[in-house]
Image 1 (cartoon, rainbow, N blue to C red):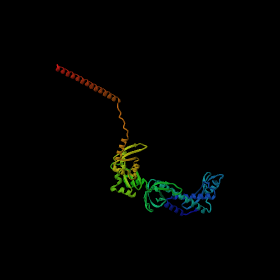
Image 2 (cartoon, one colour):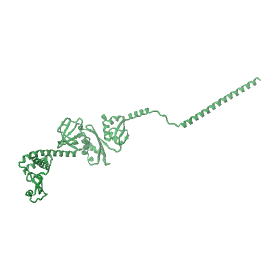
Image 3 (spheres, rainbow, N blue to C red):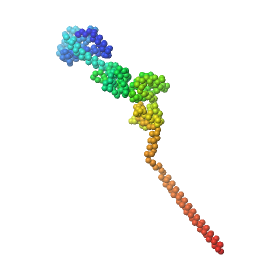
Image 4 (cartoon, rainbow, N blue to C red):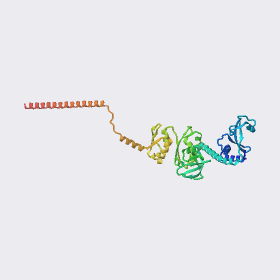
Length: 419
């Protein structure tokens, strides 16, 4: 056995406090190192019956070989005779297993060199596993870190046992990240590498807003108010849809807080980012109207509502069009992300003009007629025309008869006067 002393155990306890590596892991690593050193020493790495045992009371460690007690020894590396075994333990019988110390003389220096390499590797592996397990549990949550430095547009943030990377795409545009400042970040992903795990964090993720609301609004933490959806353009504007499971609790009012103190705290944390709190609704028309706020809406027409597409046409007053669309389309874009509806916004005058253009563009179609009725009308008109002509002809005949009669009377009077 090799005398180690109590210094080893004190070092193990210190490592456990500082790096979170358990004492058992370190002792197990030391024993494995002793076994590796012994196999290297005897140049028989394939042996499987070798183990190292550490006596914590005496502070001694040794290498032992487990051999089977047999009558006739065929493999001395694995077997031992009954007579030799009884010298170690006089109660053993054939078929039993006995442990025989095989620690070589002057083995301390060789073992120390090998143990140093093995223990160093085991410590690195243990640290890696500790960090990996810790941040796998933190994945998808909010944590606080300290900005260390900026490298190649990536911000390095210390979040405890490791440094996390915040890529440029996960940073808030225009934000200045000063080393030494505390920052609240969202653990986006954890990647396993050959060294310590690589933790990716974000300062622009929409879930940061969710976490902040859960911290500041007790009703959300208690489950009374529920966050249905969040759409965010970091550094500029966020829309959040909330719903109350209690009819007596106003979801929007709970998020704003007394005198607006809750929302003001969140806005300050987000560097004065504008936040629109929207009341969620199962009715898509009402939900879209709320999402377009602060713009007023005249009407909402559902154009398509199926699994493939959800489209709506929103009509707003002329003076509300720019407000509804937002700067560079931001308001309608956030409303689309919030509701998952494709929203087309038109003003009242635009709709009226479109209706006029559609009316003018449509061809004038002849109305459908009943041709039988037309034929009857034409026949009646022909009959009426014939009757009129007959009457006119009859009238002409009557006038001619009257003229002839009048002429005869004149001639008769003239003849009477001559007589």
